[in-house]
Image (cartoon, rainbow, N blue to C red; front, side, top):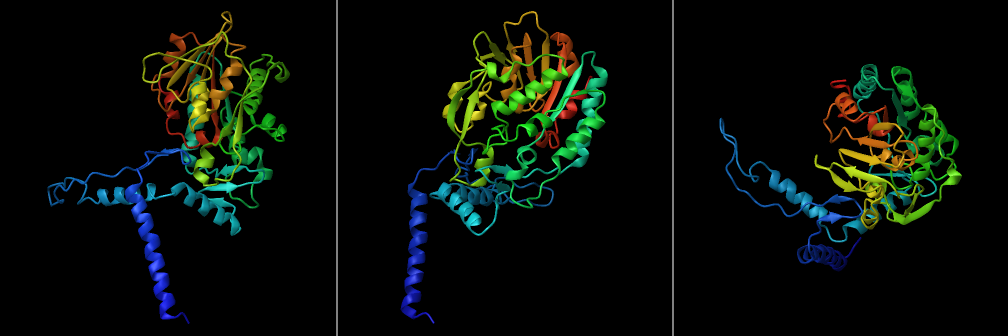
Length: 387
């Protein structure tokens, strides 16, 4: 039985602990962005007293609605002193207790982090396949289609035992069978056959430049073109400190960072991006992005509604790639075969595909998404509009 003196000591110690952290929260400046979590942090909300909601009259302000207290609670959590350290401690504790998952991320072998793959809306996923078929049926140019498997498929041997995931390969096979109007090209088989290589980032959901090369080679073979042999490229490591989005969700602060490579030189390549409709001069590689958390945005400078890459292959065809961010690291390889590569992101671009194809003299269209993005993306319906 604890003595009264010991109980008083524990109580004082606990209060002192709370007092130190409360004082630190007051003294320390608020952070606006978390590099580890790759997100903006809640700032101190402004109190707007307003009036309560009454019958026939909506309330005003954020106090009576409860929004102020909700935002204030988030603010205290986001600005808690040593937040990043506590997040890492929680993840390490989960691991020490035998759990191989934290915050929806699996801790795999070889320092590999896996986001759970789920098809939360099978109806949407099937509708997206229908939209691909509609696009291919109504364009006068060939449409090529593929879904990129996640690393939970390619590196399944690194997953913790019995880690639940939906079957990504089963959906890829379903996609191939149900989109007969498009020309299927297989990105899964080459990735699986090279699964002993560095084809995905361990801390991010994207494929590496090497993985993108194997996807590019599969596309070239489907188009009847000869891919540039891998050995003809000079691999350049541009970063050895990449910690991606899966890392940001995991809290696994002990994980060894990824390295990032490029293969294709950017000499003689011009890039125009359209971040808000107006053209902006871009580049194949934006090396300034290597100094920020989202280093993958080095490829083409990150997500934009539209990017147009022009090459010195002036007599070559033009290709339109309807894609997610995986194609940003694949696009450099296409510069050996096309005069123009148009990268179209349906999340931010509302232009009808058929009109765009006609106006820009596009010779072929590629629809390329990661499986995880494709099954959840609600903007893909746009590719069938006006087609």
